[in-house]
Image (cartoon, rainbow, N blue to C red; front, side, top):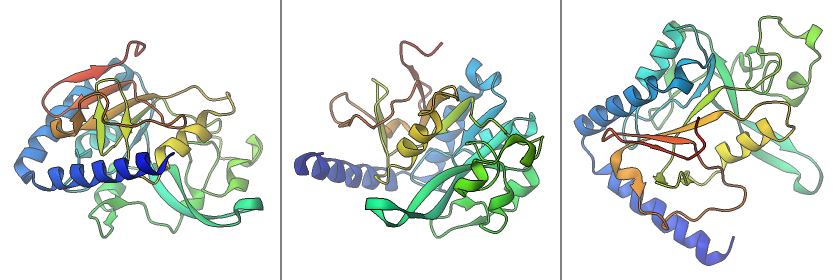
Length: 245
């Protein structure tokens, strides 16, 4: 990515964060409810048995509490982001943060989650190695995900994969382009999840407030960036791609 493109993305993120910070809580709550209802009515959501859902900040983005409660209440397996620090090898030796999607066990667990400094509920780090992961197997370590079937809990998500992921963003546009927060967590996770070809591509649905939908041309996409299949917007719109069947 060129320096100009990188700076343009940074400037757009700053502009969007300032815009979202100016919204009042009642507006965010109302838009979040509308957008979540749109996802609940999606055929792809209703037939999904394994879903990934981000856990939302109290302000500055669309909330996901209704989706989490509905999915858990209807017996879906719910996987949520968990950031884990891992050691790299080779030319990129050092430590880096990697996003995993780990299974949340129950509605009771969700209600009892602690919140981080941003006000986001998060899974405890203790016990992460014993949780089902969307990559297959248990835990966040590479060795845990590579376990053979007899070594895994037979009730676990052995083969990995998700049917649908609710994706957050700083901004979307009507061509399904997405601009995240800049860490690349979702783009890297989706590439890792699908690169072997052994797992089907999940249906990707963006969830956002009306203020986060930008005119086409403002979001700069790179070859490694993932587009979504549909976007549920807080003003009641549901934007879709041409191949979202």
